[in-house]
Image (cartoon, rainbow, N blue to C red):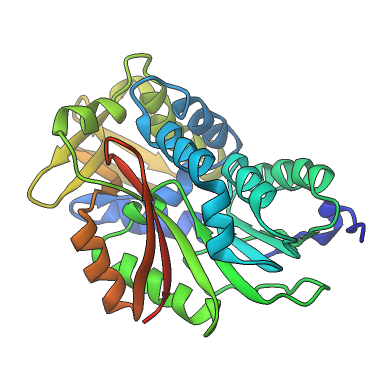
Length: 321
């Protein structure tokens, strides 16, 4: 079959929470803004550049795992599956997986950045004309009605690569896994990327690249607030900071005020002391045992694991326990 124009198949979810979350977050002590708001068009571009930095091993390593094990992973998925991807981005990993899968019948990317979603689906539709493309512009952390492909699927596979699960605190991550457990159905599965614990110097370098791309990516959040919410953040008065919290097992990323200052966002004003921070991202790292224990709390079990020779990253296949 030849799918309809992907742009016409786009399922949009109303999305107007940005202002609410920013004002709520800047009113808290300590201040925080959800990392999902990094991904406007410019943020998505900068993240793609981050993935190309030599220090940022995550994307490179996960791609190597997919390339080396694509046939094995596809066999574990089985034929005629519908692939649902949370936070699909540019779709590079998706391309590898769809190419290896046996007669995939549908692809449902759920992505908050409409521009990134449209671009990736248009490209994938040309390469996989027999796969029904069903893009959903939405925040995958909220309830989403997933469309069904026109062809009958034998099972649903939820693809969640990139260690994005690590951006959530354990309670939230467990809840997201529980949602996957429900959405995949009795015969479905999930393929989840996780970053494994390793030397803190390697971890901190990945989030503080020498070229400063991650800094630009982080501070672009302030640019977005200025543009969309009528803010007056002066970017030169704020800095990017990422450090590894060994006790919590996670990278913590902050925007740090360089001086005592006041910032306006719309009709609201917020005071910053010198050195005061806005928490903008967690990037949790797991041991294999920790991840399996968390999955079990969500009603899932790990059935297969694929990793790299250095055991820096892992793709985990999950099914209902």
